[in-house]
Length: 112
Length: 113
Image (cartoon, each protein chain N blue to C red):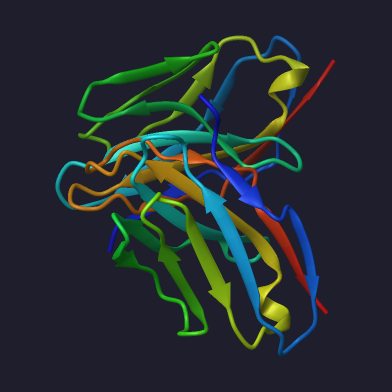
């Protein structure tokens, strides 16, 4: 069945460092891909999305490109801030369903 | 536009009891999905409702059930609670077309003692 694999955390960075969180997926057809972020004690917030191959989603300095050839959707940010500290979830929804399948989440800790 | 709201935010129950959680979707959204989040299992899909009909269901026992009302508000019920049902229950809404972005509420944190 469909699945999402993302890198284990925590990822610990200094402020202004470059961030990459790897995400790969297995799915039939052409899924939509998402990154959600969860701050402590809160629900999930959509960070960005991409619905077809080579699409680039971007928001708040974060970017991810839908790579069908490598089945990947890696999250990147050029300069992280302390306020970016949170758990990041990669997810997909299949071509024929709205059900979201999530990765295990990656905790990001940014220190001043 | 108001976001997805969930009530209550926190709940403490004992084993064997039942619980009902409520979710009000974003205005105009017709699809409501429920997810369970635990440290051990991560985020798992429970079920999805669209126009008062269950459209999709995850791999949870029959103790977990839900429904959707004509105004798109949804409830989920867990009967005969077990310790392992302690979790954050998240509700998400969308317009209901395929692969539409889902918007999440803040969740209901359930603790079963």
